[in-house]
Image (cartoon, rainbow, N blue to C red; front, side, top):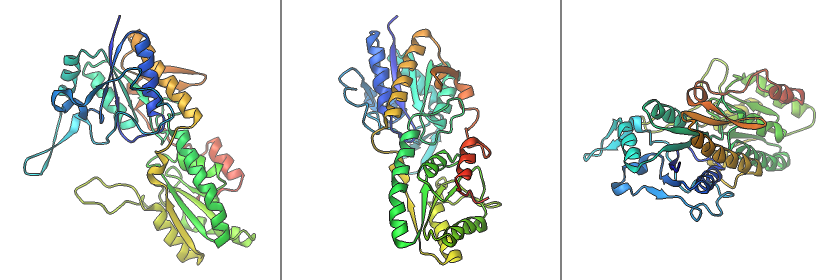
Length: 362
């Protein structure tokens, strides 16, 4: 039976989004199905005359597997269950437009929505499924914090980007005999910091799952100096926090949600004061989201996109595709977003890092 499929990309962008879109479109078109893309999350549905809905065919997705970003655009503020509407006086009101989303999909004759996103976007997908919409989720987040899949696409590319940056810092840190503090993304899960720090031979890795003591970080750095290695690389996840303290936040508009940030700058100042060594901080920020996906992420993304169409063909709605090596399988959306996948503090990757002399400040 011919179907009409819609695709959305929500939340932060991640390398591999375009590869998922391409695979899903080509797999659907091979079955004789129609495919539509919703621009900027669900926001495109609310444009006059469905101006934010585009036809996706073979020509639309030609040559995009290697491209970063998403041809559909994305937003972190398009939750239809709490949609922000600007009033004539400039004030912002939050309204539930989920019913409109479902109505518009039905008006368009959409048989299935492929929702590509991370924890937040897939929670929206789960809730839309509970309201009767046929939904299939695809796990996307560079944080790798979705519990129901071994890996999310975008993670390996973010780790490679961070590793390349830290590799380059070694030579300048050694030349100037400095402590270099590198802040990586990771609000509640330190996967990027752990993998990139281990791969790039950092001296200290600080992650949210293992609260640190500043004294222990100082000890690890001073130990390097005593051995004649007069420089150090410290990798800190943005959500890392001292024992008994809290993570660092940016001083934003008080009317907005607080954003994590400033961990490297704070730690750099503290280490300079405690060690008297020259210290510099670097925040990679959105560089971790950008650029072409690695070969691994391209393949995982293509597999996820193709698998989503297979599930739609079998009527397996309300599920998310997930990697369970060696296969891509389906897991219920409710299970997919039930828990965040955080770094096991006693897991083998942490044990490996400790075995090669990396300190976690604990």
